[in-house]
Image (cartoon, rainbow, N blue to C red):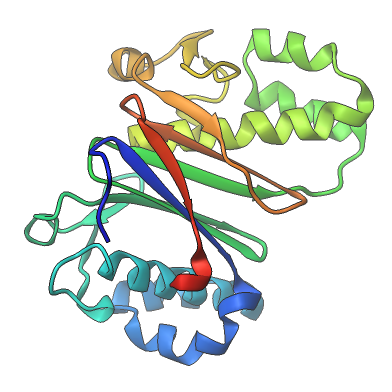
Length: 239
């Protein structure tokens, strides 16, 4: 697979239900590190989704990498756990990031700069609990905006902001709590709204954020460290 423009991003989505018949094959593709991580899950269903997500991503990335099969892909991990391709395998200039929540998996792929994606399944919370979560996850300006929302819109607003923050953190390679209460993500460019580690101040201004069309009951977002020419929503049924 190739990009029409160097600053294009391909966004792929699939549900675990769609690929569950490939479970045994996907398990066979994973390396020892991935298997150990899967075994840490207490609930079998979560471990199964982990195997499906990682196997699917391996197959997807192999379509972008010349001469490398899914099992041969070698991941390295940053301090915060963000995966990337080992240098000798990234000669095709492929950067990626993926996320999975409940039954859904999303992967973003580009050939220029860093990116982060996040998808979250909406859980049922009462208004008071949602506002309590927001106090720890949103900036002062975002909280003011949330206070102006009708109760019926609180959940949508909260999850919209949360996936945008997660995608920013993943693009920057930092932890989510480095940006929750200090980076305002309501607009297409992230802005600082609170105390932020100096390491991230310059990088935040380079974050371009957008929500991604996804399945009902989910929110999803993409952040890149560069202006995007086009975001292509790719058909996972072709994968």
